[in-house]
Structures are given as structure tokens and as C-alpha cells.
Image (cartoon, rainbow, N blue to C red; front, side):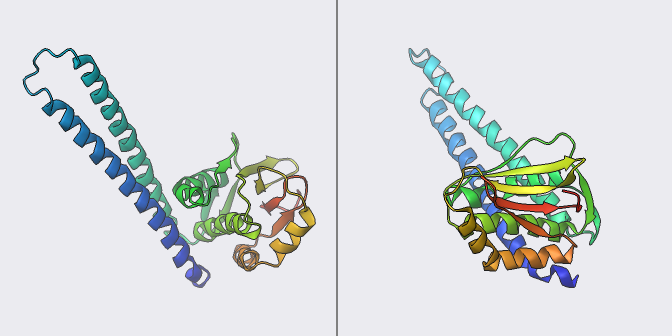
Length: 226
């Protein structure tokens, strides 16, 4: 459990962001339910009204928004529940694509506040790893923090799951190229966020590697062949 001691703040950030999103869901449902009530009160006796078609259209739109937000609320609560249960075991099989997808979904609001979208590319056959799910998620979070805060660029981040004969792993890359990859590498390797990433990787026997090609980023290898 000692390796998990620094995960408290991370769990707090994710939980706070998700509960805020759930509050947004409930606020939208409440607003649209109130609108429906107002529309119905406008015509309490169901009397003929030349604008009745428009009234039903507005009510239908409200119902659609309520249904959509209800489904979103279910996804948020089920995702948060699964996130909480990653603390159940110190070592467990982890599907890289699934755990990355869930973390990105739960933390979407935090990146949106910085004007950045994190996009996970499709992966039909994701690799798995036996590891500590909590620390592995902290590693994923550290990678995103490093890229977002190192250069403070307003560019989206693309996440690729690597699973081929050449090797297995995950990489985080800027969507757009930058002017000086060497400067990026120096800032990245000298940052406090990179130090945090290296420490958490070391706890579960992984190693982060800067990517200094056209689209710079960070790669985490599950094996040494790539």
C-alpha cells in the first residue's frame, strides 16, 4: 500500500471533476423538466391552439434532452464506480484500452477547461498487463499532465494503444507539430511532472520515453521490443 500513498490527490481530482459533471447533468434535467411544466401550463385544458404543433415540438425536444442527460449520468456514475473499485486489488489484469478510455471520459471536463481535447484512437485488440490499477492510472494521468503543462500548448492530445509484433504499450502525442522538438524534450525531461511520471512508472516497473519526432509526446512500453 505504500506505493499508493500519493494517489489520494489524484483520486480527489478525478472524483471532484466527475461529481461536478453529474451536477451539470442534474441541472440540465431540472431545467428541461421546468420548461416542460411551463409548456403544459400554457395549455392546461388541451384546448385547440394554432401553436399546438410548436408546443409539442418544444416538449419533445425537452424529453430528448432529459433522456440524453439521463444516459450520460448513468455513464458517469458507472465510470466513477469502476474507478473507485480499482483500489480493490494491488495487482490485477488491466486492459490498457478500457482503463485509458474510462480515465479520459471521467477527466474530460478538466482538459476542456484548458481548451484541450484528449482523443483515444480505436484499438480492436488491446494489450493487457498485470499491474496495480491505481498506479497505472496515475501514470496515464502523469503523461497527460506532462504534455499539457510542459509547453502550455492549446493543441489536442492523441492517445494510441500499441499492440503489434514490434511491441505493446501506449503513447500520448500532440495533434499538431511544434517548432522545436529539442526544446520540448529539454523542458519535458527537466519538469517536476516528468519526475512524478518516472517515480510512478518505477513503482510498477515501467519506463517513460519522450517522443521527439514530428508529433512529440510520451511513450510507455509494456515490453522492451518496441
